[in-house]
View 1 (cartoon, rainbow, N blue to C red):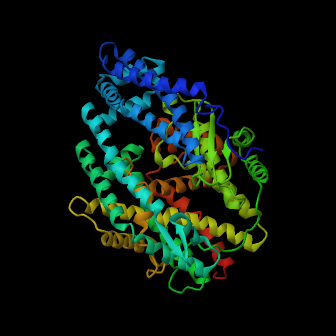
View 2: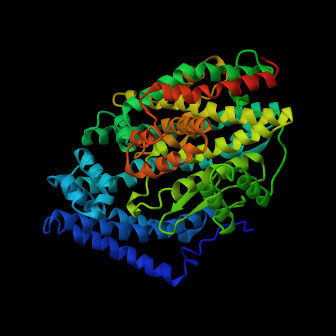
View 3: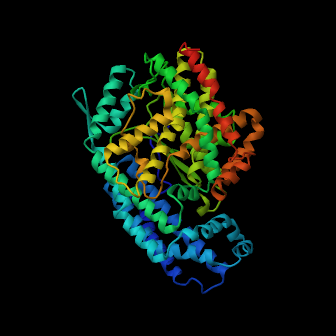
Length: 587
């Protein structure tokens, strides 16, 4: 079986003649888009919109092939100079179409009786949701010249500040027992089985932030001020309102989610306190022991064994998922192993024009790596269920992006816990699930509180590092309650989390809680309804690119603005907390 993914379906390499042809073609298509914009209004609305969509499809298709190939190559070799060079060229070409794209969107928004125009043409009907969204977005769109200038200035503004944070956090070194380590390495020590190592690594990590806190604070202050100013120009009430609008999600849904989380949060505090006590702490769990491993699950799996394990479980859930997973292994969709120059973590990228996905992992054979594979294959399953949409209808909003991936995790984890006979293995599995869930509940809520406070303060105040640290500590005290020892929190979480450093994506936090609890709620419904739920689940996934978050959920009979759904999702964890406490002798 392959150990690396195959990119031959895209190009055989940078020297593939097709790569050069497509590179020339994307420039032609971008010019075609700009030329088209100059003719807006000379034809009927149906013909004008249809032509604009066809051109956008053409330029998107060739751009996606090229940018994905370069990104995949760079993911496996971050020092690949050709990938960086070509991606720079491609982004420059696409940014040059910003003015034309804005003109097209404004034209669509200005069409009288847009619904009738859409209904009169089959092709336009397929893009009905997107076109109506364009019209709705128009009230927040500025003039073509202004949009172009803002796009260009962001390169040396918000984007540059983001790059600074990334560069500083990727280069800063911590020192542990005389050994220098980068930030990911020292943070990974939080999972070390040795208690002294975990504490010393925590102290070394906090110490290293002092070297970079001032320029990173400048990055955060300037990015957030840029977002605030842009929101004012566009007419958004706040950055949060802009995020919810872009996510196609109602404020009522967010409020219901957060209220339910607040109600249930003390039960996660109970889990954390129990973990702390099991590790010898009486005043809550200190931050440095929050990720301490518990129980024992040392079994490792080859990639072939991982494949067989996943196929065995998914076969009992859904044939389409089983068959897609088999294709992923058989057709070299997955790049498995870590090596020098390869990016960390894992991701899945859909290639809708080829009806395939590509998955990157850093597999080392542990059970958690099997769960990671299941997660990324969930994204691929989501991609599979939207393949019947046209190319421009292949994106879904941020809150629902983790639905199928997290659902897959629940399928795998529940099967593994149910099959665990050894109490130490069962403890390791349950603790892992609770630890991950606590992150999407307590930690995500702390991040939401912190970012809210930053946006509230920034219009009138420049926040120096000490102020940001105190704001972070305040958010953590509120979110973690008595579950953590308040003498050992993490004041510099604002430095190391790249989620805060995007001028185009604010509040990149609550979608994690939404995705995790939405998937958990769907999984709970599946346990109640059995096979009858699966067609509704697939239909829901299919709808995510062409409807709002709330309308997609209605397909499965779920009202996301009703706090009861979120309560039901959270309540399903009570059993796991009780099992954990019993296993550590605190029940």
